[in-house]
Length: 113
Image 1 (spheres, rainbow, N blue to C red):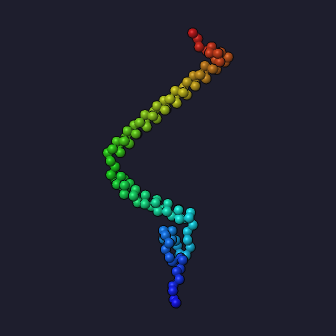
Image 2: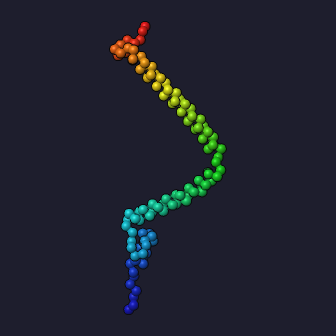
């Protein structure tokens, strides 16, 4: 007559109970967060050796690509500076013309032909 009664906290009923701490069970949100952390850990573990190999031996293709990017970036920077300088110079020239020809500027009379 001594049949053992199963203890609900000790009987495994699925993966949710595997990560439960003690007799308390996790809420669905807590379980979902733990699963996402486990996925993140797996992804980081897969990424770690790849990043390690890339950081120790940079390939020639990566270096060549970075050199090309550096050249293009410097060219774009130079062109941008030249454009800004041109715009500022044009504005200064227009302001200089506007000081001498107050009313005729709006009609386009500042041009002499």
